[in-house]
Amino acid sequence: MDINFNQYIAANNFREIAAFFETKPALSEEQLAEIRQLASHKLELARIALSPPYSDFSKILFVKEGDFYVFLNYIKNQDIEEQLKSMLTLISKMYQQNPSSELAGKSFIAVNNFKADDDELAELIRENNYSSEIIPTPAISKRNRNYLILAVVLVFVLIRGVIFFNAFHPFQNRTVDYDYDASTEEYNAEPPSIDPYYTRMKFQIDSFFVFLSDYKKEEIKQLTRINDIKTGENPFETFYQSMPQGESNSTVKISNHTNCDMILLENAMVYDTIKLPKAAYYIKSGKTIEVNKRPSDVNAVFNFYLGKQLATFQTKSKHLFIRNHSVIEYRFSELLPETKEILETDYVLREDASVSLKDGILRIN
Image (tube, rainbow, N blue to C red; front, side):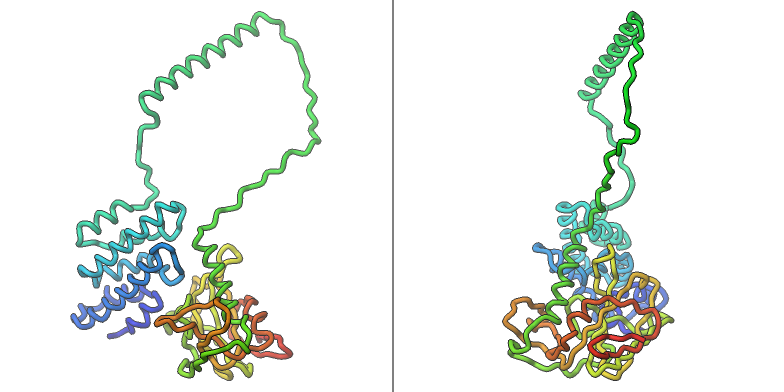
């Protein structure tokens, strides 16, 4: 294969995959079977997240991207369409509960890029054709129309009565005192409503930061050290993803000149205060990575998580995040006194950066 499908699908980079299919000849059945298995895993993740009680949506944002469904067109079979049908049914139920859901609305638009062979799936896509078209309907019923005519007649009679009354009564000049200096009541605009998905995500990311940096070392138990994570790799399975290399012609170099290892967390900022997790990069002490710069990174912020000896372990806290196979998410087992404060600080990185630590203060040059 000319591209690493596993890497691109894991990073939800379906635009590149769709472009590959458009320009390349048909793949072998063995290759298609491998890709279908990866796509099936994505659809299963979506089904789980969309099943009440709703869980983390950050890993299934691809369901509202048209490129995902263009990609599915090239590999679709009966099993893929059955999974897609199940996913779309769950999105429809979520939309019925919350018509303002951005995830549902954009998914209904995006799924129109899929050309279904299954009649039931095709009908389901048509039923949920979320568009701005206005369907003409009768403005009022026949019964209400009669009431409207009666109301118009009464208003007309009332107006004629007022005119008649004024015609036979001398006009009396009455003045009304207005206080033009009196302050008018201040208009308070309603704050824009925020999709519940974003408010849930803010709580989850805040909770994840607490999990990473706020625990008592003396309470650590059942510790298993993790030594196979390399610089540039994503150590997490919760929220953050791995970004494929070579996606952009522009990169930023980040060098770790502290005596600790660090994990660089890349987030998209929405509504000024809500972080949407994008990617995570492990950087060993003394090492450098390159981070792709994309046009969509205008509102990107970065957070630094510093410590030593990546591991999975338990504490007395029940505030846990679980990886696949019931393993507690990785985190540093040795923290600095400043780790929590540094992690909670947002940084903007637009140029190459050398990161160091002096007197407990993170310095970026």
